Length: 269
Length: 317
Image (tube, rainbow over all chains, first blue to last red; front, top):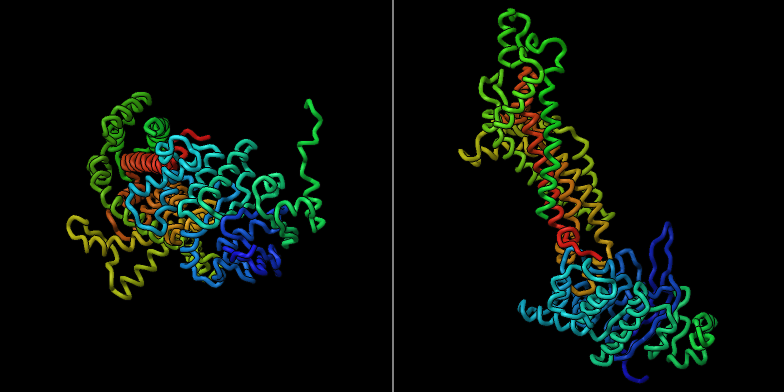
């Protein structure tokens, strides 16, 4: 691709202090995200996927040591002040987390939590914010959204909560959405619905999405390109067809081999 | 919510009954004859008979119990042997003093404990955190009567800023009240503030590591709002739970502190009653303090359920 990337991660290393030394969670990772594309990041647990995502969002704990560069439209995010980062998070970036059950604050209504994201950086009337929240809930497929605004998170199922999380992430119409295993904690039918939803939103809004998953089946369905992480490193970056046809790294090959192929099941089962 | 409040109030009844039974029994716990103890060595046989008749001790036990409860239910706790006035009247007269100092002390505790705990958590493992932890340790370690004495020496005797004791009602002279109530309130508050600092700090640290705090930050809202709204709302629940405990320590601590500062509150009233064996007063004071603490704890529990929508709204999945 020749267009300038929206996000460019260059030689990113993230370490955490552990005992007397420190552990490297991400080791010189580099990849690009282009406007409007869906980039998949695959890899096993502990391969550094989530840490990379949190590094992009600037949400790592203060003990984390970062090196390298994360360029958003050419500006290095690692050199930004808290305020600049906050503005970027409020206007350009959105993130959906792995655990819908604990990602919402239990003592505030979902309406309050969505409206807070809507009004984080833009002043608007309560009514306008409410209407926007209703719009967002409607967009993520929650029925009778106006009524659900008054609900507390514990009154919703996991799938519903994850939809609320997506609504929060979309509140500022971000240009980049990071989804960190958004469907892992949910059952399979809800998984498919949410992936459809994300894909639809990308097509409708032109949002670039970084989808983190360890599920190659999911990637094959929605991703344009895939970054494979293994043992804290990016071991392969390729278009989705290229990756499936000619995997370059032995780990990728293993990963593809471990995906069950439903087509091969005997008929009649 | 209403059902919960009512059921908690109903639960308080057997407790109050048990405590009233203990209050009734106090007079029988005296070794030998209560009348001899009250009358002293110089009392004649006639005096002793008079004392027994006054206390109703010459009646059969079941009549005594019946009389005790009949009077209790009418709000009659007997007459103080020391002061010669009805116990209820003495308690009603003295309670505003104690309540005023307790509220003052509670406000100090909450302001000091919460802010120190939050500052410590936000500066985890840095010098401010360590300073706060040391403050909390000193707070919980210092006996409040010792602190009271040191404060008297420092602020009254050496510096002359505050009177050594006494009490001016708030309604008469607010400044005077502040001058007399500050040292008692501070000496009561410091222990509680230390306790609250510890609880706030550890709860805050736990809450700050929760997923929903990360979500809040990902929205691009200010850090002030992340801590002041999202974290604090969750920190308040455990903190409110310990408020009940704090209130009971405040009330029991007031006996010593009011005696030291010569503050004419319930604490001093009870302290004097104990040292002069004023049994009706001890009974009444015991009942009053227990009832007050029970009510306050019920209030705290109801407040807790009100703070937590998972209990308040229900319908969880």
